[in-house]
Amino acid sequence: MDRTFQVDLRGVVDLLSHHLYGSPRVYVRELLQNAVDAITARRSAEPKAPARVRIEPPELTGDGTLRVHDTGIGLTEAQVHELLATIGRSSKRDELGFSRHEFLGQFGIGLLSCFLVADEIRVVTRHADEPTVLWTGWSDGRYAVRLAEPEQARDEPGTTVTLVPRRDADQWLGVPTVTELARLYGGLLPVDVRVGDTPTTSGPPPWPTTPGAPVDRAALQRYAQELLGFVPFDVVPLSVPEAGLTGVAFILPAAVNPAARAGHRVYLKRMLLSEHADGLLPEWAFFAHCVVDASELRPTASREALYEDVLLTSVRESLGDQIRGWLVRLAKHDPRRLGEFLQVHHLGVKALAMHDDEMLRLVDQWWPMDTNVGTLTLAEFRQRHGVLRYAASLDEFRQLAAVAAAQDLAVVNGGYTYDTELIERLPTVDRSVLIERLEPSDLTTRFEILDPATELALRPFLTAAQRALERLGCEVVIRAYDPVSLPALYLVSRSAAFHDQLAASRGKADELWGGVLDALAASAPPDRPQLVLNHRNPLVRRVTTLADPELVGLAVEALYGQALLLGHHPIRAADAALLNSSFLGLLGRAVPGEIRD
Image (cartoon, rainbow, N blue to C red; front, side):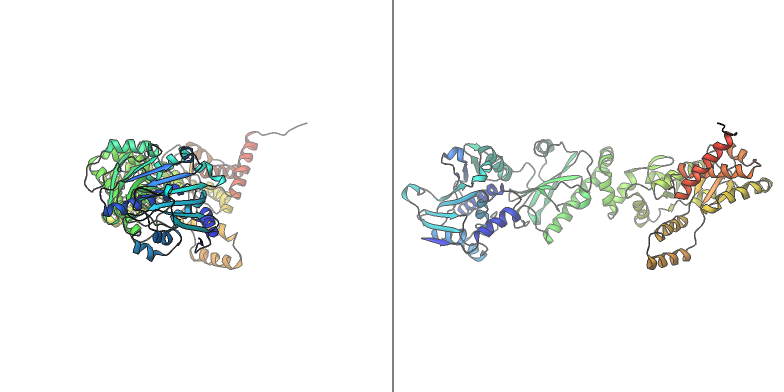
């Protein structure tokens, strides 16, 4: 007698195909899970029972159907009703023994996922000395249960699942596809799985499954090359006993974008959960690709990702600690190798060092940074120069590095990702470290002040020069400094730069926020930017002797523009206009005369 499912199966199939599962290919995984769980259940009572799963695609069956045979425990008629026709009732599964810890999945929704590729599912199953039962389900919501005909009866316990394909699902049931999917999902299963006569299981995982066991690094490198397509920089064995997790982290051999995480290959009880599982490692460990097997982590409903819970959080922290420990051991026992790693993956290590003291010490000792006296580690820099003086941005370093070096002032370039933050964090782990952010005033205090007689003689020039730049809010001073080849230097203090940002924001703000910005600007009057002319430069000395005030103005404006460009300073509209007018003015003075028709 036909019966009706206790759910709207049409709606369930639509949910599975369009929302729960990422692809119809999961039907192979669900069939394998049910088969392996049935074998596990039988072997708990009969340890020597056979453990075989045979998959026969339509090309092998000859009747257009796909069949999966297993040597599992099989089901009674009552169990068929409870497990195959009711979704979401866990209590009965518990009573029947199909929700125990060692099982991969659950009956019910897993079998219904086969409707992604089939219009009809037939289950022929026999439990111990019970008669063989035939369950047939259709995608329109009906099912039927009856005793199997004699020619359908099984000689031994087990189950055969037959799928009658949908018209649009042929590509999912071909021999090559089924073989590939059986290998993908069940390659590590501890049972003999075959598609036709082709074995698809490869034995136990290639990594140590007990903590402390020896690691065959060469074999794991070959495994990574075959499975993931690269030879890893190194191999880090992983183990988290409370999660029943073992596996390996393959350190990527080339730099990757930290924001583009490829995910990790995760098995649950040796059945593949996902090739791209996210959230297994901390974000900073983007340079590692993991392949792991776990028995205690929970999958999401689709069994295609890990469920975020307290255990997963603990696993993530533990795996991060193990990768961090690998880095520490590398620093201690193989510094050359660590240097090679840092050249490729320094961003990940620096990201970890932002909150990990041990990694900060590693960066301090081993990561070479750009300075104006060569490439040095922070530890080497402090040993040679004492105070760790740094420029906080690339532009600031470019503007001041050469001049600072000429004044015997060593400066670290803190403009690369995380560098300034790490420098500023160093005193929290070592109180003896002295740091100082480079200010333009640090340079001007080292410039040589001119003797009083020379300064007095230059006063008319400075007055004319100041008049030329007054509208730009820039102060003109003259000092003697190296390098001699640099005629002028434009220096902006942090307070002046902040004031410029306020002014730019004020121009875009509404009346309310404009008032707030005006109040901020009034509370922090800035130091004026300075154009520091170099009296040691021959061109500057010639300019100071000019008697024509107009020519002095043009020359100072040109020096101002050159200082902006050489220092990589932003060019405002007023600066661009000044650059243009000074260039044309000097060109006009250099090419005198009138144009005649």
